[in-house]
Image (cartoon, rainbow, N blue to C red; front, side, top):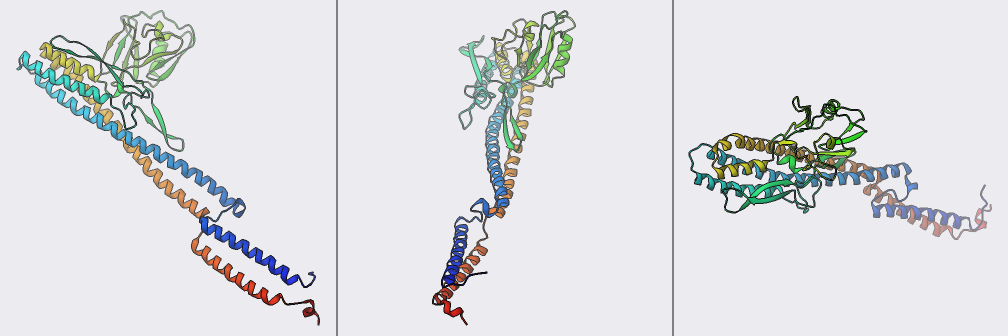
Length: 414
């Protein structure tokens, strides 16, 4: 029951005018911000969805940037690998020409000059840096150059030439997140991309009575292999073969030494993570020596890099050894080209996958943005219409108020 007084009309009018002003201010704020949620109390459920959607779309944008950066780096890297493949094709042509036996010693020496210049170009491309100034083919050790060059006097040459090219990077890989808990692996190890032959290590130490003393861990091409106390050489061979590393192990039937051979063209990377198993069996030096050039001096090593094959071709031409050119050297060059082609195909497939992730992220971004718009954006047409209605009601209220302010208590008496 309401008590009727002279202030009733004024109080009610002021109350409802304030309520209309609040609604108008809220509508103006929504139109100004183009968002229908100014505070959590406006729509708690939609606000909760909106926070999650906006958080997710920011991650999707980062995924897109990651994938696009990867694609750009793959494209740059493909260019250098493809150029080296073209250079190797020219080197192979020179090898075939020099192997036919119809050219004189001077002719072969002239060919060797071109081969040496092509070798320099190969090394230059292998030491290429990307747009960010980081080495493209050094694994994760990107601050320095990927390959070191050793110069020496070569028989038949008038000046110091490249005698050896040594890998200066590592075999580390980067995992780049391109979707929720989905990663692209980037493997840029130069001792895989620019390798020619399968590498084989043949230990000379008799391991017939060898037995591991303590629990140890060895690393083969970055894969850890646990060696338990009491394991003999045959148990070690079985564990290496079951590890998933691209290396196969065996026991030499004559020397009883450990033999390791890579199943594809790359340089084997060995180290003792804990313990000293590989050092005890005579495969690597102590842990103070870092891979890949920590192989024990008495271990027989075969299988070289693409640079080794080109250096062998140049030196054979300087010596006039056409038999070596047409045999072992030409075979190494063919294997190097085959490996380059394989790596180029892998890099191209990585690029395509990165671009697929870019396109998927763009599509996801649009879909989530549409969800954000549905939950949080104001319908401008409806909002403007509602605002005009509120303004009309406000004007009508003010008009009626002006007529009611003159009323007194006598108007309610009969």
